Length: 368
Image 1: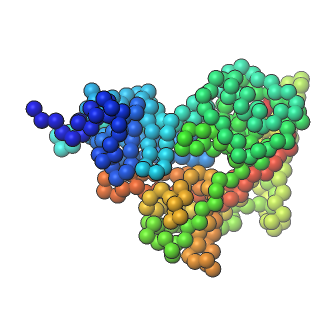
Image 2 (image 1 turned 120 degrees about the horizontal axis):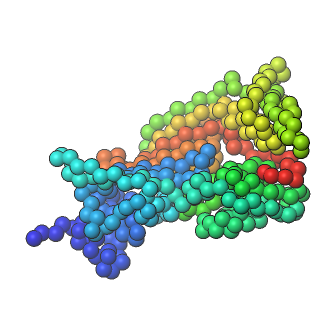
Image 3 (image 1 turned 60 degrees about the vertical axis):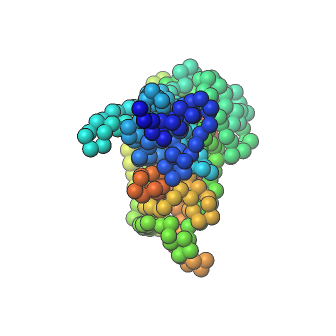
């Protein structure tokens, strides 16, 4: 009977706990329940600021489940020799295929543990007293739903809410946090380690197309101004204490755009006044951010100085120190690994205004 090297390595891992990266694809390691998978052929990791949750996908060819079991619910981490790309993933889908040409192939899909905050509602209404900071509200909410997710506050906004905040028991946890963040001028994102992060902007990254051209596969950078307006109106209805519907309007002015450019939109559902103001602010920021549309693909997962790409990063594009092309915020990031192409990053971005922190006025006492 013959035993291949992959099987021997898995047996060694189980017996000793030691991990030999020799069998890992070019330094990229997919670790399941503490054991390195050795037959991985394709890996993909995705993150987005719109829904701050890491998702992943990978194929494993001819894997022996009696040695390295991977199943729905298995814990997954994806790392390189120096960096963590995804630490707290779990498998939610497993597919098995068999062909005469490739043999047995397993395909797995999963998400980061922070997906629990996207899937969950708060459950029981939580009332926060006046003079509570955003840090305290977020941490108390995580404690109330017994979430193990670590909260990292980089905003350090110590100015408390002047009014009482009551969370709607049916509201999505992340949506609640995103509202709070926008009121205090911050952005909610997640880290590769599986933490919830409150910040203004993540570190600045410079990509020099001339000095590091071997890293860039393609770049499509478009800047335009057709979607911005001097005045943006949102028409909506809100309910008073007697459940009477009242027509109302919220308006945002942009003095950087010439007068005479006005747009008015109408919501189809009744909204609280504060929600309408938030929605109008969000629509306006998104429109301003779409002045710039960026699609960038590059070799590896970091720039020439070794700074990792991450959602929320502000990226500056240059041809040289004197030749500035433009800048943008990373909105979506996809990292892929294939046997043929190695590690690559695919980035899409919008102008900084899409996620530009703007402190909004606080809601009056009531449900947020």
